[in-house]
Image (cartoon, rainbow, N blue to C red):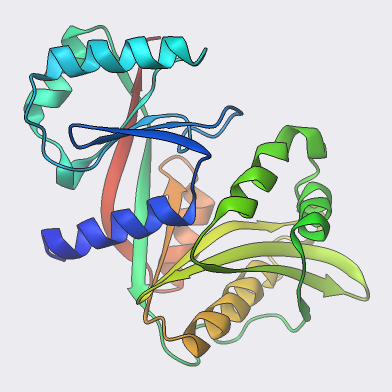
Length: 248
């Protein structure tokens, strides 16, 4: 995959998971949403820099302080010079949570032999309730997701997976151009290893293909070995990696 393709993929991923407040500064995109998600509360290194890295780091620190947020840098390997990593280290930052962007070409029948279940497109409010149930997490802890879902500009779909009227899995897809992004793929803890996550992926893929997508992507944390294994078994390959940096 060449640099231009990876840049388009990165842009699509940022657009698919937006924030209500952001600031573009010399090729870096600062995002401020609040809540626990690092992707929407970090400095995203996207385009080439023209200013010295130490000066840029200090400026970002001042901006995040003005927003009452800790500063976190999200640094994708393909768009990062080693000099930036050195500057972050010298400024007292430590890297953590390496995350992989996985992708593959998609076509009809790409995900076969999945569990049969009732797939439903549902509204944001209902999906939030389903996500809370499937993930066994209080809805207040994921309230930031509702904000994100409401401000996504590209076309999106929210899926609930049901068996005997009981929700067992959920997921989201966002389509922009050729790209189909998969987000929030979860199975209820009592329904894991039964193929429901794969069924959700298949349903989201069918939706994307109907709208002209031909390349699917998702993001998975490096220490989530079961998820990485699942997606690799489904034909996904590593497109690139990014890491976060913060002062510990």
